[in-house]
Length: 66
Length: 204
Image (cartoon, rainbow over all chains, first blue to last red; front, side):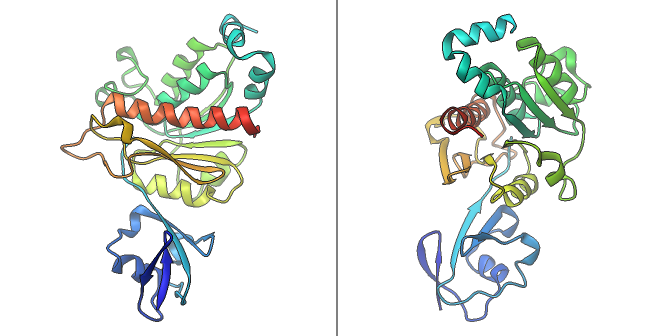
């Protein structure tokens, strides 16, 4: 199925969890915050949220240092 | 009004100074980002700051953080309070020597109009960003400030009207890429400037 991630169309397996999707895109989940269809999904829910066709995902990635 | 405030008022005027003085800014972390952002905010005219950090001033902080050699060993929030009050003695400062975590972050910053994310670690950055992303408060995060050079790559990204990220988004502090004063200060100063610009234009 197709999803949007940060405005671009990307492929994902059917019934994939948000967490597995992020890992499949080589993103490091601990660095991210994620908005799904314009709402923040708390980290602890990522393994339970199942993605659907045309979902819109915005990923913000952090690196350390301050 | 003290001499500092009178001096600043000559540049920005009474009305704008009073507007800034009403705003309460939370600063999560008092290291390289937080300490330097704090002095920029104070020099810009902000008066109410809530600064939270659990840590102590150590030698490896002095290369970039707004502390001095005679403050080694002090809690950062105590040292920062001293230093900020030397700029403006009439600040309304709340300084808390507390470790910020998922259990206390909402309560710590719930009463602030603006939150500056000034952690060094990813867990803190993502925690704050996630919890306050849709809070209605102005939130200014930082990501990617290590090393030296290419400081024009330290950019401001407006993620939504009240959520900003400053940094080059890629350069992480690591063994060969240390945190060094100029790029840390560029980032911290940009965080402060975002807050200043937002409040000047919109209020809280």
